[in-house]
Every structure is written in structure tokens, then in C-alpha cells.
Image: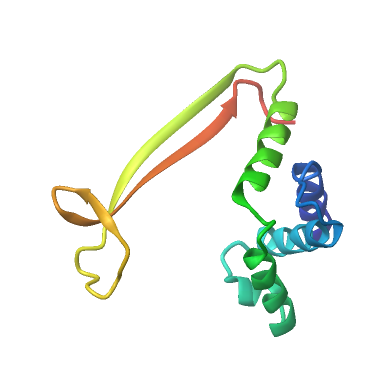
Length: 130
């Protein structure tokens, strides 16, 4: 399974550009580890204190931006789905944190209820997957 995950990560992020080959290589390793065990925290998925620390340093790097990651995803998605009709299935849910009094920085999701609104999206093709 590990090889399948590594191949998917390399293909999905082949256009990633942080202007640093070292950072890009680290990003691919971290994404492979997280994709292999998505239920685990960074600390557990990375397998050691040193690897977890490297992941957190990567996240804190100024050239590491969500825009770069999203651009690579968009390019991979566009390439993968050329010539297909796409179905964009969306859902919204409100998560209420009203009973979590010690949380800070949250906004209101509705009617003065502390929480967040989550907007999820699943992109599908009509064709059967290979």
C-alpha cells in the first residue's frame, strides 16, 4: 500500500512549487505519511520526534502557502478530468461549540451560537473509475 500512496502523492503534487527543492521533497514525504495514516496526528503519522519537528518547521516556513498546495491540486484535478462531465456535490453543516467555553477565536455560525459552518464538496465524474 505504501508504494500506491507515494505514487499518488507524487502525481498529485508534481507541479508543487515552493521555490525550494528541499521543501518540496519534505512536503511530499509528509503528505505520504499523512495519506498513509490519515487518522493519526502529525506526531504519530511521522513516526518520530525529529520527523514531526521537520513537518512543523515546514508548515512554519514562509514560502509554504496554501495557495501553492491548492494550485497543484487544481492542476492535477484539471488534468485528471479533461473530457469528463463533472458532478459537484456540496453540503453544508453547522458545528456548534456553544458548550466549549474555553475555545477562543471562533465566530458565530447562526443565531449567536458559537461555532463554525463547514462547506464540503465532492467532485465526481459520471464514468466508472478505472
